[in-house]
Image 1 (cartoon, rainbow over the protein chains, first blue to last red):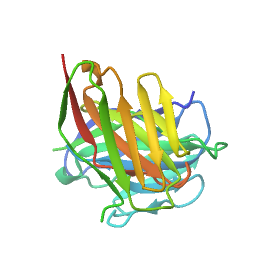
Image 2 (cartoon, chains in turn blue, orange):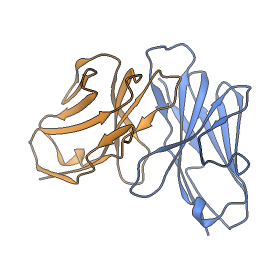
Image 3 (cartoon, each protein chain N blue to C red):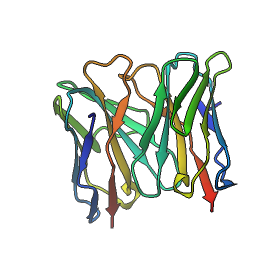
Image 4 (cartoon, helix red, strand yellow):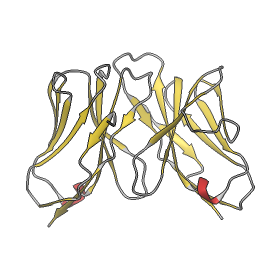
Length: 117
Length: 111
């Protein structure tokens, strides 16, 4: 159990367009979902934390108007990269925390590779 | 000082060797500790996680946590070429809080 999926797995877009990435918890309900970004040869950096039904909390230096996060249900969170530019090209990874699991862990999706031309 | 520090390597070992990967951290509020393996261009794969000080074993992997020293380790016994990957330590306060990742250690196991 505890499977998290992401869609799409890979996307290539032109500069200036918007891209939506979905993160789904397939077999559990997630009160909290997290969005991370990973540049080549670097570690994962948290971008924002989203709780179902409320506004996301963004890490310092992450533009909330550029990276729109919606956590509409206990199984789905979306990240929209608006007006994407080449410097937004990265590996975007989500994770989800189960509702009932104080001593549980977060479960990560397989990631979405975004390339902005 | 970074919250989580990890030797980036690269680390190269012969097949069958015991591998030791380590991280140190500065935030005493961290209560749970994880190790992830990441192959090139793939998402991180959870290997182990623990909330306790001491050792936790799973197959060829042993995670060790020393909260008093703020030091965690991952040991890989009988290392295999398929273990060649980047290993990331990560830690947090609870599973509901953000996770802080170390920079990762690149491991190569040579046949």
